[in-house]
Image 1 (cartoon, rainbow, N blue to C red):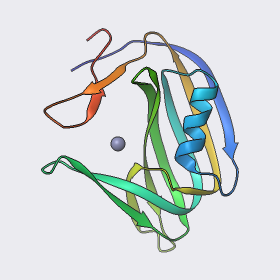
Image 2: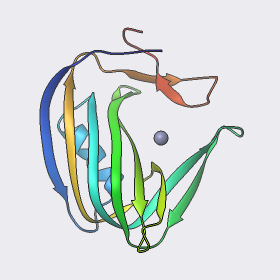
Image 3: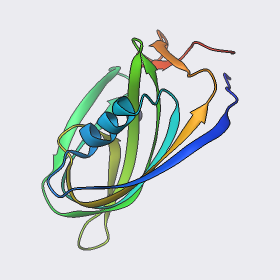
Length: 145
Ligand code: ZN
């Protein structure tokens, strides 16, 4: 296990505009505010979702789209550092008109209908994502292991 300790920083609440790219907008918010460590939450509705599933055997992402209006039941994530820049990592659960669930790692191309987001800044040394040979992912490897 690798853990990090922070003091809570400012909390930002903001609303994304219709037609915005969910991933790009939250990512830009973090970059514009110089946020290098944060937790992220969001809810609302999207016009379509562009998601990824990580194939643990093949060690590669499989992209898929859901081309219909969806509720964002729950969105969670964080901001840490990758290659010296803020990197947003978000996952979300969605529901369709029948209440059936979909979900995954949120990719660019997820288009907002209406969305509320919260970003909780964390004060302390930001975790750094480094390549992890075992998983094939970039995982928190820097800082105070
Ligand atoms: Zn992910």
